[in-house]
Amino acid sequence: MKRKSLESVIIMVLLMVFSCDTPETVVTDIVHTDGSVTRKIEMKNNENKFKLSDLQVPFDSTWTMKDTITIKENGDTTWIKTAEKLFKNVDGINKSYLEDKGSNRAISRKAEFIKKFKWFNTEYRFTEMIDRTMSFGYPVKDFLDQEELKYFFSPESVHSEKLNGPDSLKYKALGDTIGKKVDKWSTKNMVSEWIGEFSGLTEGKAGNDMTWESLKKHEDEFVKIVEANNEKFDSIWAKGIILKEFIGDSNSIRFRTEADTALAVVGRKLFIKFNDYSVRIIMPGKIIGTNGFIDKTEVLLWPVKSDYFMTGPYKMWAESKISNTWAWIVSGIFLLFVLAGLIFRIIKK
Amino acid sequence: MDAEDKKYDKVLDLLKKSRPVFGNADVFSKKVIRLLHEQKSKVSLPELIIEYLFGWVYTGWIRRSMVAAALVMVVFFGFQQALILKRINDLSLERIQNGVLFKASLTDDLTSRILEYRLTGKQFSDGKVTVSEEEIDNLIRSVNKLQIKYRDLIYLIENDPQLKKYIESRMNENRKN
Image (cartoon, rainbow over all chains, first blue to last red; front, side, top):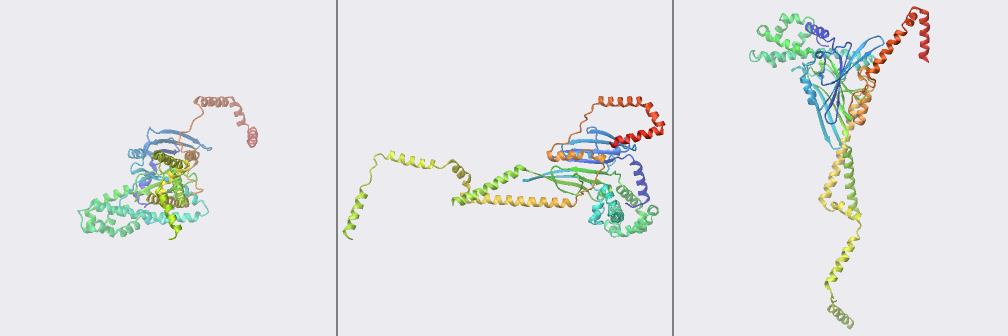
């Protein structure tokens, strides 16, 4: 989906090579009314390899672990490792994220639990949040409409279901459109991030034509240059052609080091080392709000991909409520009492 | 004024002057008090309780406050329930009714455990292994013994295509039955 420059291709190949041992992972958070959370991590792999450095979500020896093997008729073996732990509160989960030594340690994750007493009901809100990786990017909603956004954030199983369903052509076209728009979004983000980093590095050294505001005015031109030279971006960047076009001859020579450094920083942010996984949340009581997907088992699901938290925090939240039976009874008695009092007064009159 | 009227006035004056004389004023007072008490005690207990419970209806500001509190409670309840219903309706639009979001190997017995959790609030517990290690060892030993015992027979079947075909057809019939 992202811009296919030489750098990205190399990184993608490297990621593919190193991600062979990455298991398919599903994290399930079972939220309890007292704020405690039972976290269950299910990892599935074709080999019995569950190296800590390859795992998407952290766990340690204090967790209860279980290993399962399934052998299909054709002899294919699947190894499933399950790790489970009851956390007293979300602080425990946040601590485990801080101590993460797995494949997704570069990103910042945290969990949040809020309980609100609202007399007739008690409402619970649980959030899993991943911080954005870019500082100057654009939100994806600026590039995709509502239908495209929904499809963009859908799990893979929904994509394949749509693509194999009766409206397969429609969804194939939708997928292609999203792909093109996401490419455009990625390029805009890359340029915007580069401007942000570069102007930060040259601050105080360069003239007024090199400030963030003045560079931002020429952002679209820069984007067009990058898009037009997509295939040979690396070579023409190395020759200094792009930089010369963008900031002029003298500046491109003077600030070459800063420009290269900024590009390297942007590359690291854009192609962050991250292995996808899925998050499931099971809330207590009746679910009343969420931004996730609900499957037929009433379980909430979010796919977690690096694109989702590139330019803005990715919040996976769910809200549920439990009726306070005692409050209903107390309120009913009070209403009857007042009503009876009024009737009594009328009779006495 | 005629004679009859004068006579009437005289009788009235006479009556006014001749007031009853209390023989014992204390006894009389006590009797009056006792009668008053008796009248009071004729009020039944439920009436007394009702009077006590609903005494507030005679005080204007308490009555108004109680009615206001009851109205606020009804409005709050209606608003809260309407809001929740709206949110649940909005939520149902996002639902994937038939979507299977997970492969079977990763879901295990979660559905039944979720149902149990929703209905009873019972916390999740690990599954129990009801087969002991000794029993598993015995099973493996039995399988090995059987394999050794029928090794010759298997060899014969494998090397005789007709026999193999016959046994396979019989096994298929058995499966169907």
